Image (cartoon, rainbow, N blue to C red):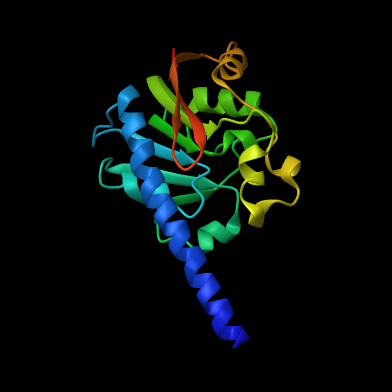
Length: 198
């Protein structure tokens, strides 16, 4: 009986995760398009792509795409062929490699966002775009608290409480400019911010 319960619980979690990704990916993409309509000739990288669930949504749009994550487990669980393990503060790409950087719910976990933005600027082509999605959190870790299964070590998971003004200040010295930001709701309130390499 216990093994049946565990199987049902695991199946329910997988279904929840799949539905969440499908729903939020479509919402994210709609807002992303309001800043930039991705062309199939453009080269895209998803920074902090996890198992590549969102990247799969973009695979039909861009002919050239890569996923980057720091977690070896994610590499083992993905079927995306172009997947690289790397730290966001030291990315293993040549200068001016990408037209688009997409990063969903990653920046709030990165300790050194200045180094991350410097790397974004380095790997973007001139006038390339970085699209960031991050939580609206009046209290640090609030979006984790609402998910009881991830309640432990809240402050270790989210390192920053971000908003568009903080992003603008963080990019002042590294060759990026703020194009725009929007607050929207996709299962929880979040921001989408578009940056452009100068």
